[in-house]
Image (cartoon, rainbow, N blue to C red; front, side):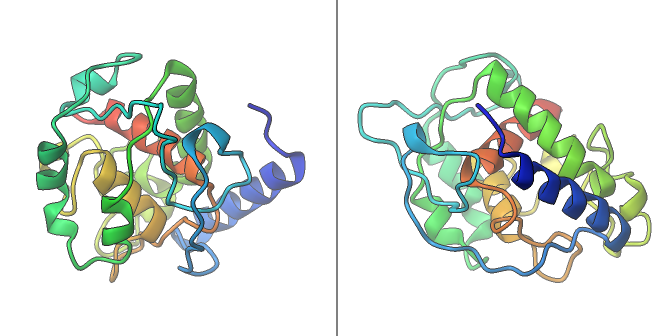
Length: 196
């Protein structure tokens, strides 16, 4: 997948600025559109991709499964149970309706790069919550390796919702206008590989 040069530079500049201000993208508006997983581009902004019907979404029920290239589909009810605490949070119903696109080694590698550029300032390079921009945040950035500590779901739907819409009253604001849906899914799948 090719990344638009101007978009990449904008993201890089935004990432640098956020590193100084503590994860504050321009605002929390998330446009609503519904591109399909097969047509998502690096410029898509919507957090509401859907599968075309011929694709089988892959959802993982444990971090160990997500570290592989394909894994086996998780039970949808387990995914929804994990996401239940996010009920009432911004974007909950939109994200609950999503199908999770299957991860690949390429997608996870891309997610790692996006994480490094956009998330590590607060969460740290290894996701331990020890990034330089997060040191003065209260509450502190989440240690992403501790799946048991996630309040709004540690599986794919919870991670995607948090990335797209943020968490009120914390330094974690939504990135749904900054990152496209395909980028948010890539980061989501990468974060699953960090969980213990």
